[in-house]
Length: 412
Image: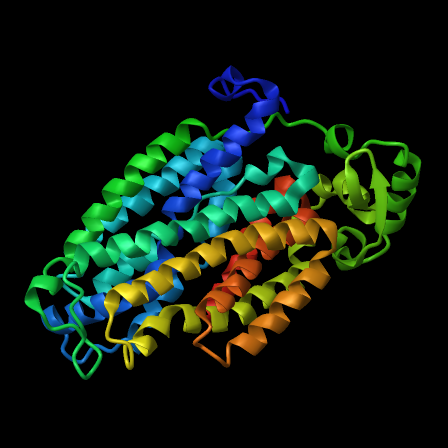
């Protein structure tokens, strides 16, 4: 695809999408700290009890995890920033706030839990507009999976780094489930400086290769084929029906084009999505459905992913082992996103999300099958942006997905 970005134009056209998507994965990798929260929760709670408030509990820190998952209006702000500044500068703005706030957490955790919420929960979770799906619009599910896999996969490496840095001697918690060793607790604030340095370097590299595709007509570049006349008829018919049925591939039948298997209504979507008004997007049945899906799935995701290590420490006296569990759970989260996204491209959003929710509902009662549960976590955060992009188009994606993320207010 074509681009007006001078750095991206240095690469051959066939490699440009790959370069930008790789840059997106690198940036998302640095944002995966939230999926290590279950691993660092005992450290944070123990430090706050030791330094600030002896009455602090692990359950009370779930507030911090909810905010780390995404400050409710951050994605919405990121969507507008992407429109105003472009992908690179919008991402740079968010990266500076994110990494800088992590560094500030070195000071805030030594003062109060409230200040830690402000720096690590509010400021550090300020969102970055996501525009990477625009580069491969005929494989939206797969690209969503790959990009968000970076978000989930970051924890695979970050979790063992956290544990090796804070607890290199593999010390155990006391009978109440908290660390009390001063040599361990003194390293907790220093972890924020270490993470800020690592993330800052990776973000600096990733931002160089992040850019926007040239704003061209999606009909010609992706879906224009022998079915053009049929697609135009469906576009006219779609204007009479709700977005849930007419503009989104989640409820449609399949047809074949030169780009592989797509849905006939997806073709109509690509023709019309860029012209959908923001008001119509936010009042559509599709938006409400996606909003409720993220809200309901987010409830059990926050609880299980945040407290599994604290639960495991009640009968497993091996911090390294629990960190390894956290790491492999993150890897499962990472690779499952690619699978769910690719499966949605082949099947449909409705079928794929139905399978993921059914598995998640069954697994949430076990709590011990951590990796299996995290595979369903990956489904939620891969399929929701997939469906948002499919239903509302690339131009509306940032704002629409940002508004869907406001559902996290219900968690906070």
